[in-house]
Image: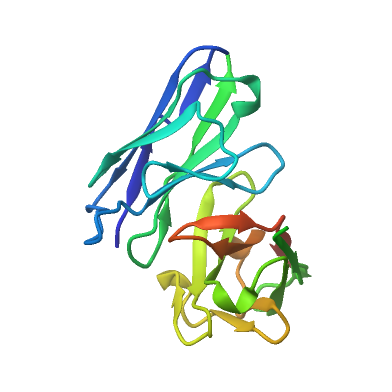
Amino acid sequence: DIVVTQSPLSLPVTPGEPASISCRSSQSLLHSNGYNFLDWYLQKPGQPPQLLIYLGSTRASGVPDRFSGSGSGTDFTLEISRVEAEDVGVYYCLQALQHPWAFGQGTRVDIK
Amino acid sequence: EVQLVESGGDLVQPGGSLRLSCAASGFTFSSSWMGWVRQAPGKGLEWVANINQDGTEKHHMESLKGRFTISRDNARNTLYLQMNSLRGEDTGLYYCARHGYNNFDSWGRGTLVTVSS
């Protein structure tokens, strides 16, 4: 089974500053079609998760362009160019290349 | 607008059974893969199961096989999760989610399952 590991698990941020979260997979998530099957989700307090990034780097509909995803194979990064107060919550990566799908442990982002 | 509304969560004793339902609207249900994700209190997300459009392909978390079964009724636009032999560690919020392109692009608000004597 593929295991995904996030770091850090906690990330205090300053509004207006950049932030970065890493997700590493135990196996390559690169499909033969050339896409990486790695997604990023944000779960704001008291809400269900929402899709931010899919296929490693494609922003979901309505997601602000301050969010970007990068990486390939086993190493991926979610970056927020300038953190806003509304970005607080827990961020998860998800490997969707093969079953069983697996979420990372989550990274809690809060304001310093 | 895509809407997913879960129901069926309850307080149940260890060893008991529950069937969760997810009523879908706002999209062509029969054309979408669907899935269940759960979240124990204060913990992270855990993928539970996926099912294809016509219900002929199902995938479950390995440790749940034999106890949990995903199914669907396309005539009723409803997704199900049958949960048997429930244990305390099954306690949590269960989310229904629609697949996009190998992702979960829409989520319900969840239904709470509590397993306790």
